[in-house]
Image (cartoon, rainbow, N blue to C red; front, side, top):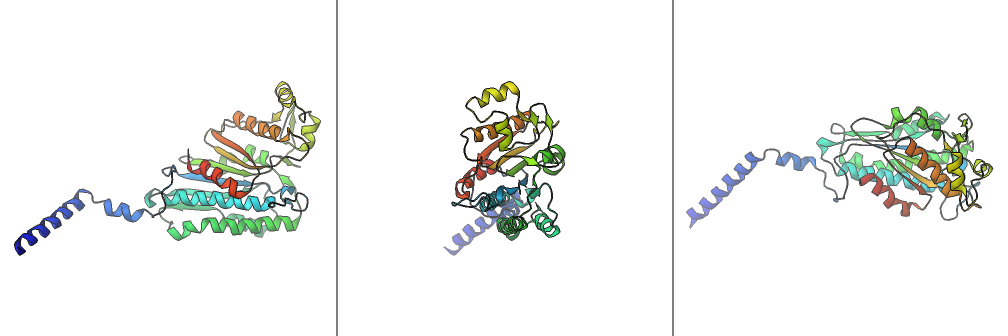
Amino acid sequence: MKNIIRTVLLSMMIFNLQSCKQDPKAEVVEEETIPVPVIKTSSNDNLNISILIDLSDRINPKKYPSPAMEFYLRDIGYLESVAKSFEWHVLNKKVIKINDKIQVFIDPEPSDQSLNRKIGQLKTHFTRQNVNKDSILKVPEKYGNISRLIYNSAIEDNHYVGSNIWGFFKNKVDDYCIDEGYRNILVILTDGYIYHKDAKMEQGNRTSYIIPQSIKMNGLNKSDWQKRMDEKDFGFIVPEKDLSNLEVLVLGINPVKGSPYEEDVIRTYWRKWFDEMKVKNYEVKQADLPTHMDKIIQDFILKK
């Protein structure tokens, strides 16, 4: 009986040794995979996520109060959701394949150097050489904490000069937000209006800005706004860009009260602009509570 048992154990040891020789990488791959809940994500992609924050007076809680949740707090919630989606994406990759980036931009740059340093701290690039599970898990918390400091500083300063979103697309988006070999995603936090005092241009009925006054002046606050917009070719001036390697998610559209067509006009301006710049994929979403926007953000970033 002892001989039979010894023979069986010996056979099992030989089988295990042969299995290891047949798949010498099996143990290494298991060690390189960080265990996390499985989600449906395009985890084989290298993500390059950029976030452009509109720090105009739209975030001023005194000028634009919102009893349900102040708009700057909604922004912070959106930022945390973007960072969480980035975290999940990286955690679902084998370490050997990790090469993913996330960063934040404000245009124009704040004059406060300490604020710029805080923004710089949000720039994160994980590779197989520097990544570990703890550093990945800290990303959403870091984005929540530092973004709160950024917004509080801007509100306390109370010096709003607008947001140069149009200029960012014209002069910076290629260099800052698009890298070869990546899935490039730009998330824009804005109320949908674009204006900056140093980037106010007009070419016929095309402009570098859209504000409530221009919508009203152009007669786009009436029921025939779509017909008028098409006939007169209202819209943004289009920089000579081919952004077919960029995806854009716009969050926070918040039209002024009083016109039932304002939001439709704003959305159409943005969509027309993205189509003409050949943006690969985009969505334009209204302002809502972060709990409602969380799934929209996850679906955009994690699913193709």
